[in-house]
Amino acid sequence: MSDTTTSTGDEATRHPSSAGAFRRSWTASTISHVGNAVTTVVLPLVALQGLDASSLQVSLITVAQYTAWILIGLPAG
Image 1 (spheres, rainbow, N blue to C red):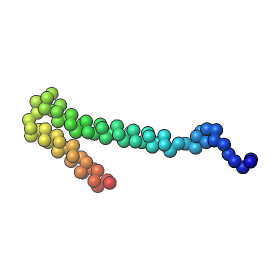
Image 2 (image 1 turned 120 degrees about the horizontal axis):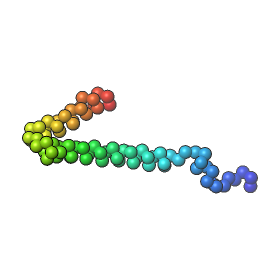
Image 3 (image 1 turned 90 degrees about the horizontal axis):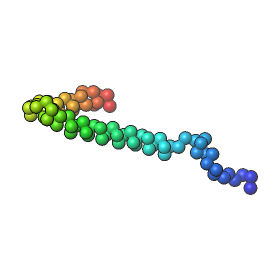
Image 4 (image 1 turned 45 degrees about the vertical axis):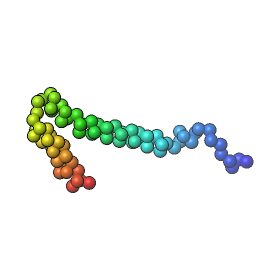
């Protein structure tokens, strides 16, 4: 009977929980995606409302957002 081990919670303190690390990673990823989505929607609206930008200027802002990803993200990935 001395070969059996009992779970007293000491195992959780000895081994880092991968579930906790996953939750932190998932939360950070979710916040990042929400921030990107908000920026994609809000930036042209701010240009329209606050800066009285024309439709050409708003479209150039949108093009600039995606151009950075194409020029930096694709070659790096």
